[in-house]
Length: 144
Image 1 (spheres, rainbow, N blue to C red):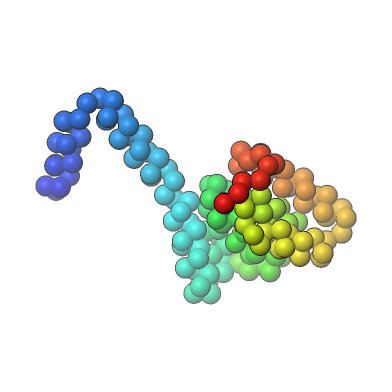
Image 2 (cartoon, one colour):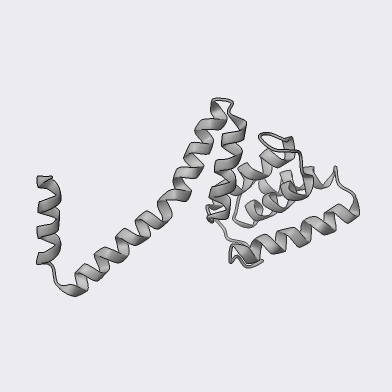
């Protein structure tokens, strides 16, 4: 409790502009933390063999915009781990992963497409575009 009082005292001593910067920093920190936690929890669950929890965590992290989870979610769909096999969704998530600079994303996207019909590839391309829009990503590459 004494630590919290000290922090409050320090916070009140700084000027309003610095307070605003501090508050914005805290909001950013806590707003981004859940997606990071989802990825880490997913990795831990996957390592323990809890595929359902891993899938749920990778799914949440991906839709929260954690690009590190895109390929992991694609793999869950590709192999049917924690979810039904879905090559269309695997293709879309691997496409996003490749776009974000994952060096294996394109290879896995190609693996998914090799098990798909031309119609499914078209569906997957449309889904990939939907995900880009939902996540506010452009079609251009982002190099890591």
